[in-house]
Length: 372
Image (cartoon, rainbow, N blue to C red; front, side, top):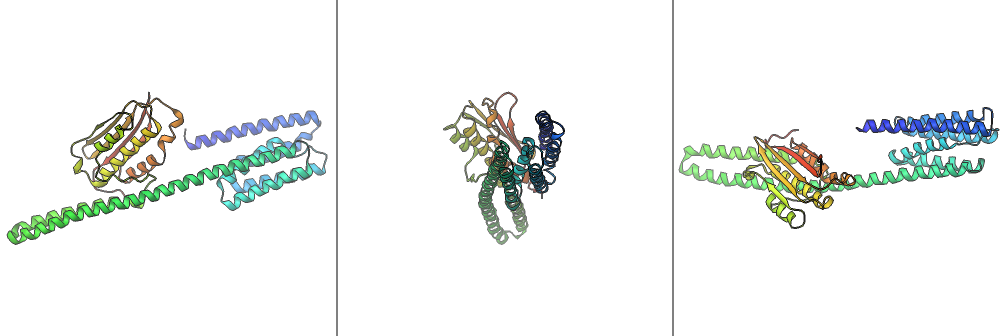
């Protein structure tokens, strides 16, 4: 089920609740007040509920219109012989409108709608009686509290993601420094060797210069790919792979977590540095998630392989399924890893296995061509 389906499901559910509420209120008023006393309440409720169902398209306009209709209904009911307004279903629709605006809209519009709701609630205390002011105020308070709490959580998540993004950019800058230093050192050594060759055997100088050209081209491609990561990095937490190998990482994990078994090819030293560091980061993030969220796992398998010009990584554990932790195990780290892998032209997937356990799978091209 995608996001649109969920949204439509919520709106359909609200529409059903609104229709049933309006019908029940109309029946109750017809029994207690008699005649067509229910008609005014039903029309007001239908209008405000309709606006609530249109909140995704005209968020602030629908909220202000709902508040205006409700305020007019409160005054009309006060000065005429009609049931007091707003009814419970109108209050529910207003709560939906207010909560949505407070949660999503810019601060100025959110505060204006919240203040408008407070004025409407205050009007019921002046012009209504019995339970009407109580449920109107309670509906407004719940809507504002819900909207602001969701807004706070979203703002905190964005702030956390931004901090992690900045940390990752600093880490990538360090990696870029290491890559440049490594390749320039190699070019410098080859240039010095070429000078010696040119003095002793000028005919062999062309081959040395070709080697320098190839090394320079490799360095340029590596820097271009790393700068691409730095330009559009993800949300991964900062951790430098340094000179450590995957085997050392797995050994350290074994000292504090479930037994982990590593399988990797023998030619890892020939991989581009940005690919090697990304492989390391993927395995590290996956093992960190196991240690944090699946301590009950009995074993972990880390498989790194090479098929033609593609590197594959898979980290799996056999922990029993725990749905409550599924969301935790796909947090900022794996989101950042996915974006980083995609910037290198690869793919990354993470999710529960059919029977039990969790799997992180990734594929990285060895080609030095960086997708722009």
